[in-house]
Image (cartoon, rainbow, N blue to C red; front, top):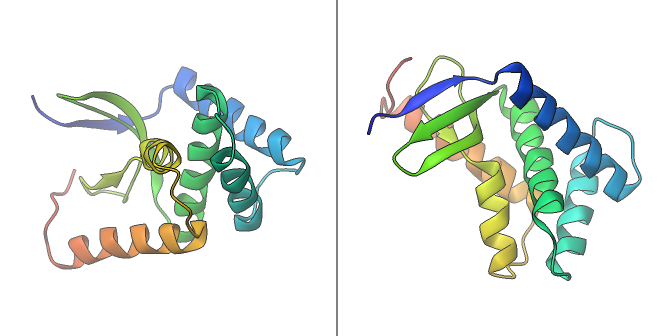
Length: 137
């Protein structure tokens, strides 16, 4: 199957906004969240058995940190594994899946520094772009 990378449609934009609103409510803060809020939410969910919605909200908040810091954009990815809301570099066929990244780490009960994960993710994407290891879209 071919990779399809497209902008979010209105329904997906609404779901993203609802998730970001939920993340803000969960930490008792206003949007936009700062990295300390996202770290606090991660730490709380790490110590609990979170439902899917709070995990998705956390993943969206983490993705928003990548977008804000890296200058990336929200996209929808479809491939042989399914569909997911992701973050991509503008004009490039390279992306990361912040919701899955968070879900997997929480499932493994992995303690981490959200700022380091954000910065490392941005660095890895930019390195691949610099090396010419990604296609233009």
